[in-house]
Structures are given as structure tokens and as C-alpha cells.
Image 1 (cartoon, helix red, strand yellow):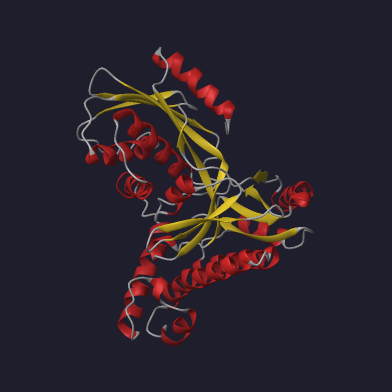
Image 2 (tube, rainbow, N blue to C red):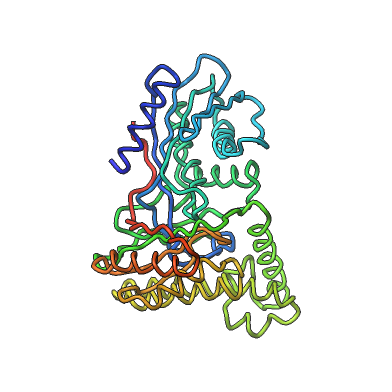
Length: 389
């Protein structure tokens, strides 16, 4: 079992807190975004992977309409009723579970509340989507507990709605689908218009390093939402000037952006250029992976980060330092921001034989710049979310 130590700690804590064994336990991994940044809500393409860090959710039915929810790392309990579930302004971690549970009960009414607890090992604020992992393991566990069966895309949309309505972040579906659809040793390539996804072999000559800078990573403060609004504004502009239908930026080529961006504020035009270019990089990356060209794929990762830094402005000094250092380290093929941005983690593509030395070099380069090393971990593309017990 992935993360057996975390599972054992959760079950032990659950038993101590609630005085019984959980009826069901589910697991969901975090994710890395490998190529395709802020393309999901623009109906574009993304390469991602479920990772070997995740969250477990344990639950049992209660004898009343009350739901008791415990954050296993804090051992703090909150309670709410099955009826009229609303967002909370305190202990906001509960909103991800409350929103997911509300989505499930909209599919099928439940007869009683639950006693639930979650525990994981995804570093919070690292850009590895601990929130989506919590939504997906809660959704799987509570769906199993109450006999509410939903497919992968439906559960992903329930998690997305929890982010929108309960957490206040207008995210796309990337994080949820990546957590659900991951497979060991493979990337997940998703078309966010059709919501069709496939898994793609990375091969044995590649692995990833996660470099957690611990820089501020807070998307709810408006930075994420403002980027999305700029993309929507740009899509409306291109729909009015191009001679073919434009429903989202996915329908605009980079050549069309160059020719028809006039009339857009410079900042909005730059914001739009980022996901447009990212879509083209993902499609090119698929061709390179099929040809076994990891070096070419890695070069696209470097290009992706530069686009994030210059056009979308969702990078930061700490992330730029990691990527700049990575370019000078032997064995590194690519590096970029992973996730929404504004802090968090960078993901680095490296040959497995060079992973240890590259990790040390990255940590040392970061420490030389900022006084403390960043946390560097080897990331293995892992299996997606599933019911454990």
C-alpha cells in the first residue's frame, strides 16, 4: 500500500477518537502538473501525474443527523448537520469535505450523518493539490459509505464545485481528474473540452524532483481568479474578431494571437498568450514522448516556466531561482512551476541516475540564494484515488 505509515496512523487516531473502527477508508494522491499551466479552465490540454504523496479519509455512519469531522494532523473536530450544509469562515479546511459531501447528497439523500477523519502527507501550500486529494478521498469514502455511485468525471466536478462554492477558488478540473485517473509510471494527458483522458508512459529514463520552496501559495486571495477573468475577457475578444467560433482560448492559435490581439489591454493579451502557448506545447510534448525524446520534452517545460514568469506572472522569485539553477545542473532535462502558481513547488525532469546529485545541487543552490534549502523529494507517478477498506 502507498503511504502505509499514514494509513496506520489514521486508523489508530480514528479508533482512539471515535472508539471504533472505520467502516470505510479511501485514498487519493496529490498531483504534479508537468505541462499545460492554467489550460484546464480554458478547455485546453494538460500533462499531469498522480504522485506518491496523498491523503486518506476514514468514515463510519453515525446514529444521528450530525456529521463529526476531524483533521487528523491537528486532531481538531468540527460538526455540522446533513441538512443545509454551508461554507465555514473558520477552520476552512472543512469546506473541502463539506462541499464534496453536499455534492454527493445532491445525487442521493443520505439517512444519517457520519464520523470522519482525514490524514495525509502532502505538504500544504506546496502546489501539489492537497485540497483536491482531500475532496477525492472524501468523495470516494462517503460515496462508498452511503452507496452513492458516481463516475470519475462526475466526482471530479463535485470536487471542483466544492472549490468554487465552498472554498472560493474558481479552479478547473485538472487537480481532481489527475488524482482520480493516475497510474503508476504514467502521465495523464487530459483534454479539458471533452474531458477525455489517457495515460502516457514516461519510460524508465525519467523521474521528477519536487522542489518545495515554502513560498506563499494562496490562490483564494484573488490572484488565481483574476487570471481566469483575464482569459475569459480575451476569449470574448477573439470570438468577436476571428472568423471561426471561439468558445475558449483553446480555439485560438498563437499565430492568431499575434495578428488579432490588438484591442486588448497589454496585460490581458499577455495573460491569454500563456494558455494558448501551453496548449501548443502539450500537443508537441505528446509527439516528443511518443518518439522517446525526453530532452525535447524537457525543453518545453523550461519554455512553459518562462511563459509563466513573463506572460502570466504567476511565478515568484523563489520558483524562478529553482528553475534557473536546474538549467545548470547535469542530468536535468526540464523544470517549471507546478500548479496554480504564486509560490509552492517547481517540478524538475531528471534521469533517475542523476536524481540524487541533482536534488542536492538544487537544495544547495537555493540555500546559497535564500539562506535555507528548499525541500527536494523524488516524485514517482503513482496510482490514482481508490477505496482502501
